Image (cartoon, rainbow, N blue to C red; front, top):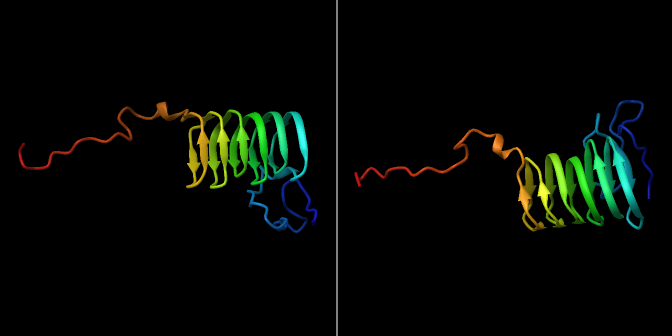
Length: 155
């Protein structure tokens, strides 16, 4: 397996650093990939970070992030997650709270409550828990509601 540098995801020529085969694309810039817990690794405890972390191994405990957490297809998480953005392709058991967005890819299985203002759920993803769209109450009254429209027959 090739080892690629972490950090901002760029080399000295300001070009995108190639990723290992099978890795999901990660936005570069201020939120570049800073850590990668590979398949076969197991960790327990509290994990906190500022940039983007991808977990393809097992983690149990608590995760706090100021940016993005990516749970790969082989990732198995038993934790309370608080992050800006959470992208899940693997298994998560525990509550997920994201201040910006949660993305559940088709291979995702989540057993826990999800709280976020924006959610993307691909067909095939499984969510066993409650979904709370925090921030949805900030919308104008009546926004997004359906209204009956007269048919024009006068009745």
